[in-house]
Amino acid sequence: MTDHHIGLIVPSSNLTMETELPRMLRAREDAYPADRFVFHSARARMQHVTPEQLRAMNAQAERAAAELADARPDVVTTACLVAIMAQGPRYHCTAEDSIREALRAEGSQAPVVSSAGALLTGLAALKAKRIAVITPYMKPLTQKVVDYIEDAGVEVVDALSLEVPDNLAVGRLDPADLRDHWRKLSLTSADALVLSACVQMPSLPSIQAVQDEAGLPVLSAATATTYSVLSTLGLATTVPNAGSLLSGAH
Image 1 (cartoon, helix red, strand yellow):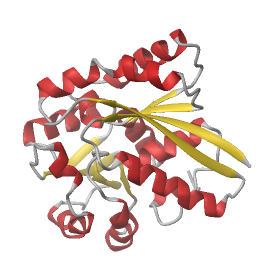
Image 2 (tube, helix red, strand yellow):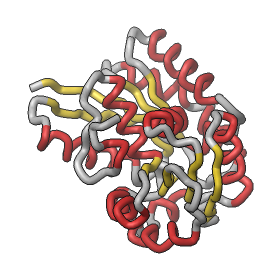
Image 3 (cartoon, helix red, strand yellow):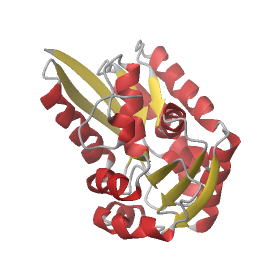
Image 4 (cartoon, helix red, strand yellow):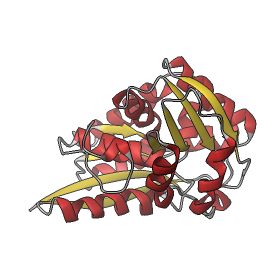
């Protein structure tokens, strides 16, 4: 049995990153019992999803990375997608480099995955060029996410903003509601549906169900992060009932 140590940089008010990601990897352990996953978290303060608090949280990433370095993780992932995308196109590269440098300064050679970069990686793996997106954000922040994705060469044909500014409230949204929300989107020309462009908005229980109903690949920031973590570790990207991206076919 091999233990894979995963470092998580998590917003202080996040309730979901430390539930959905471990839940997917625990399910994977049933299929691949030789792999076991161990999680280590460092938190960065953020309560409300505003530009000011997102910038302040980003400034804490290096401190959080230094703390995680002490645990010698095999990979480090930073969780808040909108905190990175709100800073402008391709900022995930800057954020990942900054965290990587902080890890190296503390003697850790762990690779770095951001949920923002992972979503783009997941869309590329699915060969998705036209997508629809659901976010919990206020409309101006959703537009920043749309602009970020489109700068990467993927057209967003429709987007739904649930407009929940309090991050704790986002974490308490019922994922079952997404089985109704997606029907408000125009999917006629979409290659894929991002059911939750936010690692705080729970969606995992609805991913496979919505994919079955919609008839096109469904992913989330969390499933994309899991995909990138597994890929980075050199492991099969297979998690049962977690949508096409984690079917092992990509």
